[in-house]
Structure formats: C-alpha cells, structure tokens
Length: 233
Image 1 (spheres, rainbow, N blue to C red):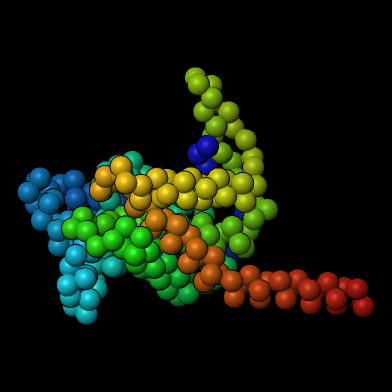
Image 2: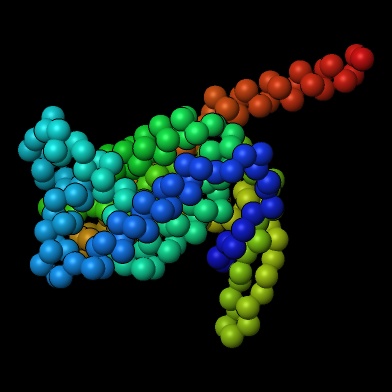
C-alpha cells in the first residue's frame, strides 16, 4: 500500500516542507557525484555514528551530526520513499504548527528518533543516516491531528494496480505496525547489524504524537467552544 496524495487542503504554501525536500535532494545529488572513497569519507564525517557520540557526547562536531544525518540518504529508493511521505503529510503539519514550530518539531523528532535507535540497538560503529525518523514524527502528528483525512493509495495485487481512498488512520497505523514488527525482529539473536533503523522510526513516531499533543488539545478545545457557541446562539 503506497500513498500517492492526501485529500487534506492547506491554507498556506508549505515553504519549510519544500525547503527540506530541496535540501535533501541537493545533498543526495552531491553524494552521487562523489567517488566511492569520497562518498565514504562524506558519510563518515556527516552521518551520526553512535560510538563517537558515546565517546564524546558533548562534542559540537558529534552533536551536529544529529542534524546533518537527517539530510543524508543511501540510495534513490531511500530518498524517494522518505520524500514522498514528507510531501504528502508534511504540508498539513507545517500548516497546523506554523513554519517556525514545524522546523523545531521536525528536528526534535529526528533527534529523538536517533536516540531511540541507540538506546534499543546499542552503541555500534555503524553510521545512521536518513530523514526517516523525522518523517516518522510527521506521520505520528498527522495520525493524531488528521486521522479521518482521506489518503489515495496504490495497492498492487500481483500484476493489477488498484487505487483506493482510505482514512489516514489506516494508512499510518498500518505503517506503524510494520515498524514495530520489523523492530522486534531486528533485536532478535539472529539479526545482523546495519539495514533499516526500525526503532528510530518508532521513536520518531511516538515523539511526533507527543509533540503534536498540545495542538490536538487546542483544536479540541476550539471545537468544543464553537459547538457551545452554536448551541446557545
């Protein structure tokens, strides 16, 4: 089930969401322009490496990689999947939170996602990179704020492609269930290092729900006030 777009209009153009998309794409184009040795050196410098954080938790250079790692990707599919989800769901969260708060929200969920990965998976000398943790935060906020919004999805059934409009709660809930199941599998004794940082996705998602909670409560209070006013007018 692959989302294509949502049916949830915004009031303002998503400047920050588009800017994040552009930065990710520009950085990736730069990555693919590098030789193999240059690419490895680039990742070694700007990706988040847990062992370095454990050794120097207050180092500015290491702390900076919490942010820079969010704009690195390991391949076209990695980049494309992340940017698709950001484009579909990020604009509404930016519209609801506002530009400045959305920047803080995006970076905070990405950082929490990285810390969750380290806590669950342990301190390893494996670079962590990608926007997935922050985008998981966007999905968590979307689930809380717009659960009934309709999302157009592609459902491949063998050689047949079906289109369907389903509630965002179903699309995002299904996505989150996969992250949980894969995350549990990643910490089994037979699991190997590397691959997808499933627990970063889980951590980012939960952080997104938590950080969007004030907006959710404010919206609920506004709806109750509007309903009360309409009743007694």
